[in-house]
Every structure is written in structure tokens, then in C-alpha cells.
Length: 307
Image (cartoon, rainbow, N blue to C red; front, side):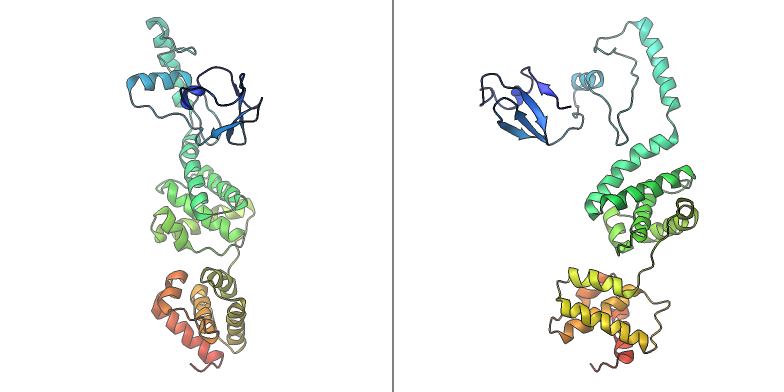
């Protein structure tokens, strides 16, 4: 239910002259805006609903006594030992009892809850920066929570397991995103993420009934072609090059599919006169220029293309 403001607290933030709408404004929160229900005047956008930051001792005490504590998994109860629900100071007799209750309450919070209170905001941040769909983020959360329940977090950081869970969820949904993209945003070494991903692959995904999809070079062609802003003709030529090389006996086992796709895109861009440099393509595909040149030679050999 939307909340209404009938006192003057809201108007203190919008100016001393008062509201510029009707005589009896009735302010409500509607779709992220402060709106007057009587005349329809829109005051401002609601930018932040999180608890206010406090700096002085007075602000800290006011925040403790008047604001709820939120977490991404819902509001939680916090027992404090200095003030009651109305914000008044407790007498020494009751203060000691409330301190005891607060200590017991803190001890009842499980490590699983504490872990999720830290992990879920980080997951939301990574989802926003990586542009991941909600369905993938939901599965990444399922994978991560199962990882925490199986106590696989020992000796591993939360961000590392979150990144590995996101990478696994992307593989389950068949979205061709590279591990380098995730590790660059999360600022975590790729080696640690891949190691955690393999652990999730063996210990977690079978329990959840999930299966990852293994991408061939064809899947990466679409991704690279779009990011390089090449034509559809260039994309079709690159796919045909890979198929022709495969039919001619090119063995791609043990070779990075990103490197094969990058080589096919490079050759196709030259054929279509949409030239892209080796450095540009190799940086996009997260492969070295040496690998790119080797795959180009392989495709030229098996697809019978003369440079």
C-alpha cells in the first residue's frame, strides 16, 4: 500500500515556500515518484529508499531508534539495548536485560544468514554491471545458496564463488559470455574463478539437476560479429568457413572455440571489405594474437582459402 504524508516533514525537503500545488495536498509514493493524489502534481523522483547515513552521535542515535534495518532477503529484527521502541532511554534495570537479549539474538544468527546478507548485494551489483537477465541471476543465486549449504565456502571468498555461480548459470542457459568478462568486472583472478567453477560443476549442479552447455565456435561468432558491428553477410561467411573446415577434417578438440570464432571473423571481415585488425579481434575474444594467427592458418588450410 502506498504511504501518505500529511505532515510537514516531506515539504521541508522541497523548499520553504511550501508545495506548489493544491491547498490540501495528499502526497503518495507512486511508481518511484512523490505524487499529489488530489491534483496529480509530481514533486520529484524517489532516488534512494535505503536507510540514511549518519555521521554525528545524534544522527546515529536517531537512526538506531527510528529506522528499520533492511537486508536483500527481507527486513530483520534488531534488538538494541539502549532505547525502547519509542526512542526513549531505558533505565539501568531494563538496559542490562535488553543487552542480554541483544547478545542472545546475535548468537542465534546463523553463518548461512550472515553469508547471504553479504553475498546478495554483491550479486545484484554484478548482475547490473554484467547486464545479466533475471532468470540467470535467479539460477546463480540457487547455485550459490546450494554451495553455501554444502559448506564449500571454506577457504574461498564470497566474490569468487559468486562469480563462479554466475558463470555456471550462464553456461546452463546457453549464453556465451567469457570468464574474462566476469573476472574483469568482479576484479578477481581468472584462475580462482575457474577453479571454483569446476568445483560447482562437480558438487552442486548435479544436485540441482542442471547441465551446462558446451559452446562451439559457431556460438561465439554471433557474439563477436555483433560486438564488432559487422554485417550479417560477414557472419554467414564466418559460419560457413568453420563448417567447411570441420567437414574437411579440421580437428577442433583441445582448441579454444573463441580463437576459432575470432579467426573466422577475421577472415570473413577481409572478404567483405569490413577489415578489423588482429589486435582488435584478439582483445575482444580474449585470446593472444599468436593464437589468432595460428587459427587463421588452420582455417585457410582446411577451407582452401588463399590469403
